[in-house]
Amino acid sequence: MSFENLIGNEKIKKILETTVQNKNVLHSYMFVGEEGIGKNLFAKEFAKMILCNVQEKRPCGKCKSCMEFNGESHPDFMQIIPEDGKTIKIEQVRFMQEKTQEKPVTSSKKVYLISQADTMTREAANSLLKTLEEPPEYVVIILTTSNESKILTTIKSRCMKIHFEPIPEEQIINYLKQNGMSTDITKNMLKHCEGSIGKAIKINNLKDQYMQIEKIINTLEKQNITRIWREAEVLYSAKEDIIDLLNYMEIVIYNLIKTENKINYINTIHIIEQTKQRILANANYDMSIDNLLLKLWEEVNWIV
Image 1 (cartoon, rainbow, N blue to C red):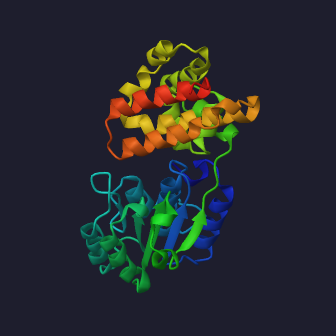
Image 2: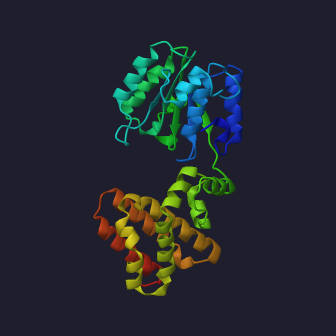
Image 3: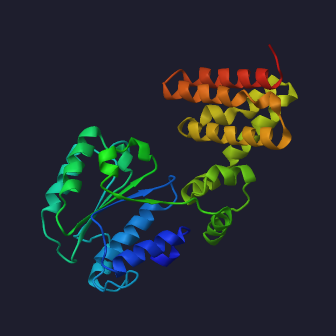
């Protein structure tokens, strides 16, 4: 992926290019935006640009530094991601701190990318703060986050924040088309993408499940509760994706209320929120789905 091929956020591209071109790179940045919007891709291309031996407007792609970066073997670049997919631990940050004391090998800078920085444990965050307060002159640290509120205020205050805007729906459709993926997705699905290419890819892969959610909603007013249970098999079998599917259910219902004035659906969003809380609290899964379907049916059909 080259810098010019990154989707959306053209203003951010220009800011990063100008920063490198004017040799005005700061010690710490925070890329903020929705999950799957391209923050990590931008961060990596920015890092490659900083490390490029030619130091042009964009990475040259030909120098030793660029070749090593493309081969994922650059000695002056390190990415930290959540261990076991959940948290960034203090040991990871301490290892990074040890490496910051070593001078650059290939380039004039060393770049450290901390992805999903909001998953740092408190100990890891406090340890990172020490490096942000007094970084070596050649060190650049880039944090990415989809949940800025979970990051220590003291860390945020030491970073230049760059906010990523949602990618327009037209560009998302074009991306899917250019990459050989189906563009046959509904307006509700596009809305659920929230301007995120990553979410669009996930929705494309799980399109049948999302379509089934719409069928469940359309069945609620049929006053045939057994049919709802038949349509709802997706909710029982998609345990790993259930929160995302319930979020999508809320979007479909919200649009029904907004476009068709379905006032009998107003309280259903609260019912779905309660179900999400129960599932996240590890309540019995099947019973939670049973309760959800029954309450939705009763609410929509005004059964007391």
